[in-house]
Length: 402
Image 1 (cartoon, helix red, strand yellow):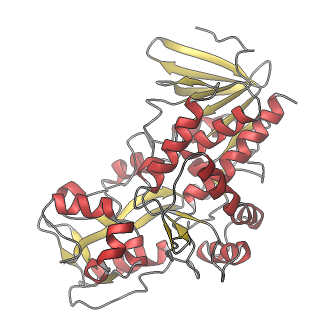
Image 2 (image 1 turned 45 degrees about the horizontal axis):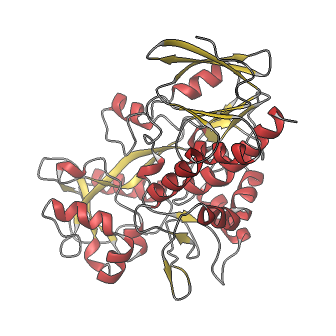
């Protein structure tokens, strides 16, 4: 089957927050848009994101301070220009999401802000502990209400230059489908599910996170950076078995939880950057200072009993429901935790408009590299998806419809 080359201007591949943001932005710019995903539009990592999204709204904060925190957490490996775009456009990105229907938790006449790992200020906005779900739902419903087409069960197989820009080949239930478009946005996420499976480890990721879109882009000539830099989430669920691979929201630590070893001693700054905290846990276990879960897995304690009940009910309701459903009350007893494979920090090289080194091919979200360097701050992934998803969609539409 061949699609009419004039049918679409912009093709977006991936239906997480970045792909949805790009598709909504391109549709809003007047482009004829198609959104392709290898299973369903609802299947993505973004919907699993719990912690929140960063933006400088505090009286003592600013985009410049936010940028300094990003650069420090990345150990100065992030692209400063991409970081500047990310943090300066964060407030407007929040307002855009609100216009689309996202209702961030508020308190005392403003946003309820928390301080997250690696941050020097309180700037994490949340929708309880289902922030990613709320954002993807609002974006998806906005796209579905527009004029764009949906192409579920389209698994990208190849990417090559076409008559009008680019040609994408997909494997579908009906066979191979080829689509010619003016511009393409790659937003298919990372590879941590497949990587964890290969390593015999746990991952927080959706089973769709297998990385083939990155490989296809590289085969087409796209440049990459920091692809070896994979991130562990410091607080993976370690017990009970139903929680293994679950990412315990890092806001547990923002609201007072601390990491403890077998002797009930704090052994690291619980609000440090992700790589630092994860390594501290690995080191503590290696020194024999960890604990074992009932099924013999290594872990340390996350003392969630220090979280005020009011904070937990407002900002951690989903976590409480999941643990209490397993007959564990995190407010009454500490919980087992251990780092779990979580995020691909590097990816395709992009410029400030989210264009890759391939003219007319854009990338946003986890598949793109540079914005986080080799270590991402919590709360910046959903922000990157929104900021660079919008930029990618707008730039792709402008290229396809000059």
